Structures are given as structure tokens and as C-alpha cells.
Length: 81
Image (tube, rainbow, N blue to C red; front, side, top):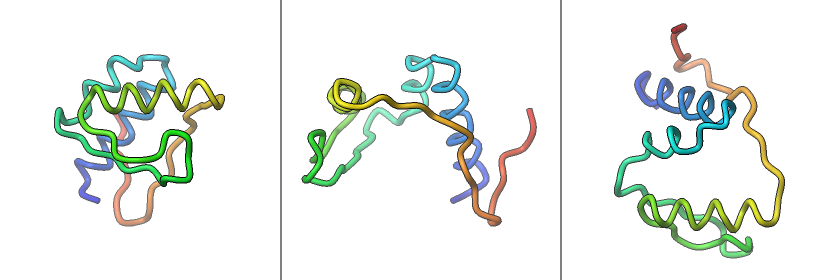
């Protein structure tokens, strides 16, 4: 992952930790596409912001979730802000 990508992931985690889901969603590209394993209740392809919101709603109805400090490989670390 590029250093810029690491920064985005770190900021995404920071926003989710702060309870700013709307701000986190603004970091997603409008054409984001995520595949979850078909064995999960929220499995399948999720396209765009609408798809991500739908996936998140299903996920939230089934599990408690939290975002803790993301781990990064030695290849790239987020800079301090």
C-alpha cells in the first residue's frame, strides 16, 4: 500500500473511532466495490456508497463493532498529524 493509502486507512479508522461514520464514508471513492464472503449474512458485492451503507446496516444489525488502532506493516506507517 502506498504511503497515501496508509494515511487514508488511518484517517478512516480515526473517523470511525470518533463516531464520524459520515466523515468516514466521504473518504470512500464513489465507485468503491467491496466483496464479502458469501457465507456471511452481509456477503456478496457491495457497490458505491449506497452498497456500503446497506452492507454496514446488515452488519450492524448482527454484530457489535468497534475500530481500534489499525495495524500497519513495516512497509509504510502513517505520519503524525
